[in-house]
Image (tube, rainbow, N blue to C red; front, side):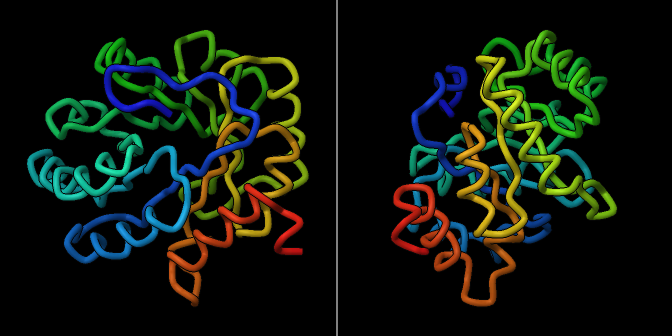
Length: 220
């Protein structure tokens, strides 16, 4: 992904990692873990999830993390809250659902990235792309931590990669899923709890994910 002022890069031969943070209430507590995780692999973008509070507090949280993310060449995206993106110095926002994307586009385009997930059908994905999404995401958990079967996610990613030019992000529930999503044609592989919830530490999990994407035979 490109940083602010640019758009998503064209399709790549090998996918890059799209890192999803845990919900951030105390950015100071995440700074060191995030920095070491970004150093452990090639990360194209970081999606910052924010616990709900007032706009000023959320903006300040993003500003704490922005130098860590953007200083390593990754795009910083905010999960929802497109109204704070510009003031927080973020590169864009990730919206859940076609309706939320439509409402956010005027706040984000043309200078910032507008991504879209929460797409329940192929039709929704196509509508998001036609509306102006810079990428679509498949397979992320919903608010109740449920997600489609992995077979369904792979099918959706493979269909998209075969038909459309707009990049797609495949969400991996485990580090092991990165290889299959890459093989299905994902342009980016999203990792959240698979990295930050790993008992070995997020940097170790990130390093393994990066190895699996760069040279899968080395970890089999």
